Length: 104
Image (cartoon, rainbow, N blue to C red; front, side, top):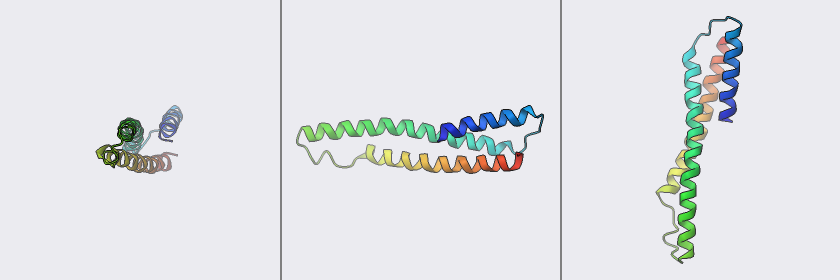
């Protein structure tokens, strides 16, 4: 969704600029792009942390070390990254809506 939002804003900005309109409140577009890019980056990083945690748990269960299979920092980090990704996606959508509303 964040990548689609970025593509939409690039297309929209190009369409608005081609009409020789002066785009106002560019700060909202910059913030929208920053939050959408942050959402994408957070998802990609969470893929890595979840893979690390999954492999660690598999290894622990294979070794019959069930205490080591408990929640760790990687699990908590993955959860936080996922929450941030959702919040950044919503914030990016809000700032994108502000930019579109003002410049449409």
